[in-house]
Amino acid sequence: MIARRTDERIMCGILGLLLHDPSIDAASEICEGLSLLQHRGQDACGIVTCGQKGRFYQCKANGMVRDVFDANSISRLVGGMGVGHVRYPTAGSSNHAEAQPFYVNSPYGIVLAHNGNLINTSSLLQFMDATAHRHINTTSDSELLLNIFADNLQKTGKFRINEEDIFTAIGGLMEQCKGAYACVAMLAGFGIIAFRDPNGIRPLGMASRNALGGGAGKDYLFASESVVADASGFGDWEDVKPGEAVIITRNSISRRQVSRPATFAPDIFEYVYFARPDSVLDGVSVYRSRMAMGDALADEVKRVLREKELSVDVVIPVPDTSRVAALNLAQKLNLPYREGFIKNRYVGRTFIMPGQQMRRKNVRRKLNAMALEFAGKNVLIVDDSIVRGTTSKEIIQMAKDVGAKEVIVASCAPPIRYSNVYGIDMPSRAELVAHNRTDNEIAHAIGADLVIFQTLPDLISSVRQFNPAITHFDCSVFTGEYVTGGVDEEYLSCLEQTRADNVKGRVAVGGLGTLEGKGGGAVQHNGQSGDNSGLALGSNGPLNGVDSTVGLHNSWQLS
Ligand SMILES: O=P(O)(O)OC[C@H]1O[C@H](OP(=O)(O)OP(=O)(O)O)[C@H](O)[C@@H]1O
Ligand SMILES: NC(=O)CC[C@H](N)C(=O)O
Ligand SMILES: [Mg+2]
Image (cartoon, rainbow, N blue to C red):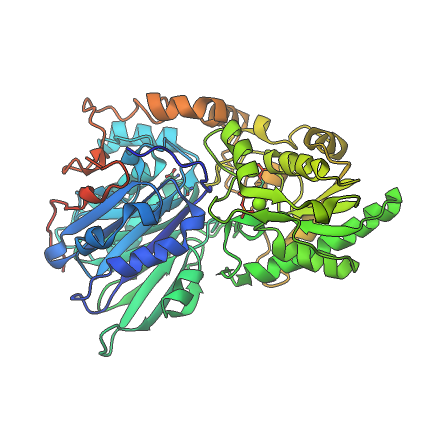
């Protein structure tokens, strides 16, 4: 097994591709697409394809896309349709057995990739054990989700399944599963399926293009972000609607609203930080929304500076994410914009790393302060968000070390005070620098002379102005209000006990996750349930998992 990387980001990205011509392999395009979603998860990645006679082929392991896949492993992923995943864990561990996509052999052979996080795993596990009699063999909520899907498909009791049955099964799943889930699944020999939770918390869209290799048909793509479609020549990008399921086979495309109506509440933090600026999510350009965040923050900065009778000489962004907003802010305030921090482009994002120690070290490895832009100046440093305060604390010190006079920090997002339970790895309130702190206390904690936050209404209108049809956003990290319900103090404390920085390592190594031990089975092998090939054990080489490219055993042909 490879060592965990120190530059992980904090999400997951999912992708599904169905080529009209089954003789063309989909794997290389899926791999390309995953590399465009790499910013959403750097812990593990995987692809499962489906070839002739419904046989699955998989390759998944810990590591980045470039580490896990090479020409050889791609060539062994046979078939014109497939599902891919890049992972940062929010449940379970970072063990390679929990890399996605997950597979279960019964019924029909199903593969699933999940972005999000379930909040009712304990009761789902009980159901699995006591009622469905399905064994869950990892601590991943995504394996659980897949088995709930499988159980609902099983209930149809059919030898051959059709779209109607699949819609019914996903409707059943949406009744049972609480939390955030954007998913792409694949049924052996049948097609690919996408669905999004009733609140639409995590993004998911689809696109099509004229079939590769000519002919009258279409190729179809599902992806977390539209940037994948742009890069692969797909057009007509459309969001999967909250509570909707979409089924694509070589001959048909079917869509259905399968859940009861619920409040559509996409996660606003996708716009603040996660998503690539060149993506459009739920009709909103991430780039435009970040420009608007800069404009709105400029007004707030102006107001506070006037009130405190302070002045600023220069605006400096914290690369990368805050650049877009910082430039707009500087232009609006008529202040010079300077790239005072130079980024080592070979070090990834620092926000989520295995431990606080590593994060801190990485900020210094990643950013260098140029004295000539700081010395003797009152600087306004703009960042997209302040989470644990690791970045701000380090860069403020760096700015002061090279001679800055006053250091004011402005954040495009309001103070983050609450846990995220929907797929972002911010489980512990105590780790958040703004938790239980006033603005002055936050400034003191990070060593700034002053800190200025965007207001929540301004953040919301920065995004919403581009799609007024979105009336709600998931803003739980700012408000502590959880749109799905079911998140109470007991849940949050339990989450903190299992997933805070200081316990995560133990969970990962010792398997102390909440899911562990509740599956009821006696088998203690390391792979996921339903993985009869034992692939998840992975006889992986030190750098990648390419030798886990093995056809799974199922070869059902579905009509
Ligand atoms: O308060 P913290 O816990 O330090 O987290 C906040 C910082 O982390 C992110 O940067 P990151 O380096 O992950 O990515 P980026 O290069 O895209 O800005 C974000 O953009 C902030 O700069
Ligand atoms: N960040 C995510 O979307 C994670 C998906 C899933 N909860 C996992 O831990 O693998
Ligand atoms: Mg940053």
